[in-house]
Figure 1 (spheres, rainbow, N blue to C red):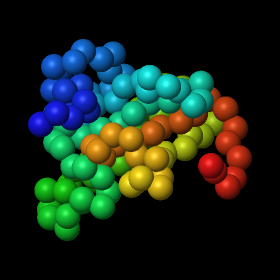
Figure 2: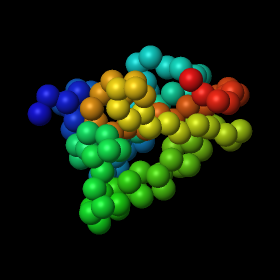
Figure 3: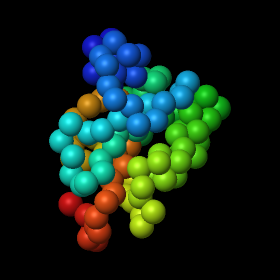
Length: 114
């Protein structure tokens, strides 16, 4: 598979991980949109939220990722809050077809986004 995030997750392409365990990795976004902008990806390839199944494996993986977001945010000093974003599909500007979450913080955010 020719997926850049799979290559980053496997270590084929080196990255400075801010968090990593057996299921996931988090690293800085190359085009940050906030003072803190980290991508959180599973090591297993899933194309997008639309490709998540109701399997126990997918539920466990996404639950694991979401349970670690606050750990990563705390490690990055985001004590005043953060935003977690998952772009899904072309209209949402998903540019890499591997599910990923943007963890953004270090400034105040407006609403509505985008």
